[in-house]
Image 1: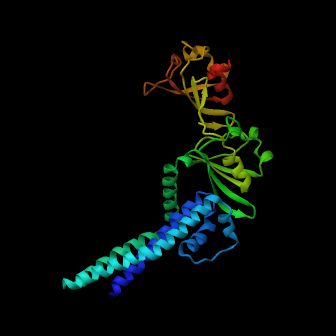
Image 2: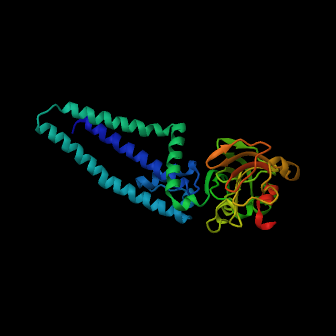
Image 3: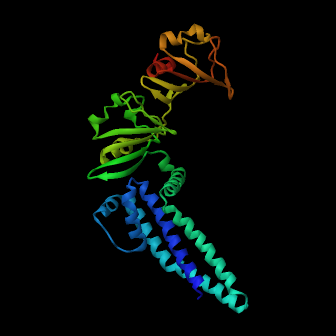
Length: 337
């Protein structure tokens, strides 16, 4: 076999190994295993090296991780026996056909070499931290979007361990019942669980964490404390499937968008206009004086309309407003009046 084909084979095998290790690393990460702990374990499982440490208990003590580990080992063995043999046979066949046809073998050798080299360099670039982080994020998003179960639960990922405690990132796909419509002060998390909230990322910005902060669907929460308590608070506490939208008497839908201390930016789909504001211009409703509520924008028939003092809220409007969240619920919660 030509030296170029041999080099191509080696680069191709290494590239596939590296790529598969990244795939299984993301799978373990979605179960909450810290990134700095899993790469060594995945490499050991995939290559069948059999090198274990005390940290392997993090895998063997969890049913989901054990299933991923078994799949990783099977895939590694199948790759070693079948795929490597297939690659070798394909390259040998190409080499034989080129010699039989008495064509210029060098052209085929160089094509195989440069194609494989390009693949190897692409996969090797995944070792560059910014690229690797972006690549893993893409794989996580694909896994999350294709998993029906994952879309209805919160994803807890350990960033680093400190004994029994850990710095953990929580993707809040669902808000636990105990946190619905409550501030951190009202949740009393530190009295129930042994962890603290370090930061919250909402969209592309960081939210200043205070006693008045409320959880919003889609938040990325960074917490520190006992990982068992963090999982209990954000995963085990979830009951049946439940939307974070508050449906009041199957009528008005109230959706928290963001909160700023006691005030909250809220979106309300008006199925039934409250008596206090029905058929009244905004200037006559006393929304600001009585409820401290300000109308930001109104969407009507798929179009945003200009809001002024003479605007009248109508059935079917989607109203974005800001004010004390409890006052907004009080006004639009028809059933509890």
